[in-house]
Amino acid sequence: MAVAGSQGQAPTPEETLAWERERRTLAGVAAIVAALLTLGGNILTSLALRDLPTAENRIVTLTDALRAVTNGRAVPPGRLAVQAEYLGNHATAPIVGAILVALGTLALFVPLAYLFRAARARRPGLGQWVLVLLALGVVLFGIGNLVTNLARDLGAQDFVSAADHSNSAAADALTRSPYAVGQVLAQAGTLALGAAIVLIALNTMRVGLLTRFMGVLGIIVGVTIVLPLDQLGIIRSFWLGALGALLLGRWPAGSPPAWRTGRAEPWPTQQQVREQREQARRQSTSERAPARGRGPRGRGGDAPPAPAPPPPRPQPRATAEHGASKKKRRKRRS
Image 1 (cartoon, helix red, strand yellow):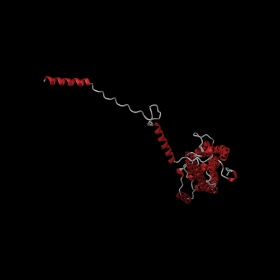
Image 2 (tube, rainbow, N blue to C red; image 1 turned 60 degrees about the horizontal axis):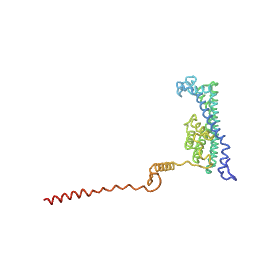
Image 3 (cartoon, rainbow, N blue to C red; image 1 turned 120 degrees about the horizontal axis):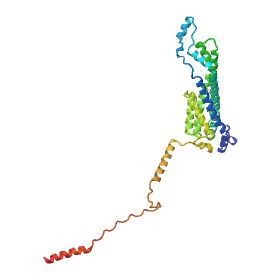
């Protein structure tokens, strides 16, 4: 591996960062180029075949073909023959589109190999076989699809100039031997490339090189390569473009900390996120609550004692004595 410490030991963070700085621009540009080639090639092919005739009224069943042969008539051109003739007359754009997609697939190796090496420098347990799987997947997937498309398009061109325009002749022209070989290569490359992308995206997310959004989206890209859910490569192209922006330092939120430290910076788990939120909530609540045992000016100390109620006013004695003297006088008179 290119990233290596002295005497074959694990690289130090300084060595890792130095290696990544030297190749980061190349990896970012390659990711953007791969995105543009993939999306552009698929769009070009789709636009070229948008008017492909359905020819529903030209379907020739086996019964119709046998009846025509029995009556000594030629089997009429069916749906497949009509579509093959259209493809043969408009084969240039699909051929160019297939070449662009193949080049985009090969360019995909550069940023993904860069991510693999950066992740392995922070997680030495990641096996070298993942990089081998990536290389096999890129080559088999790109070359296999290219051979398949070229065999189909060139066969359609030959069908246009052929004398036999039956459905069987169209099927033979569209599915020549290179077509079958390309299908086998493409299927093997699909499984290898999809698995490699999933593993690389997962491990780079675990060490903190990719955000959770980018890591999960990379896993989705690997799945959509195996399952035909992204025929135009829109999800793949978007992920590659975002990856290029991240590697080139154009990510809106900035690069994750692992790119600056050279070490693994795992993202917090959901449980840790909940605990941090709960701790922040408690701290915020305690700061807003009024502190107990503080004086009027916010200084520490005991609260001042509450003022004692005023004592009751004493009754004047003169009034009491005056009432008693009146009672004595009344007794004397009596």
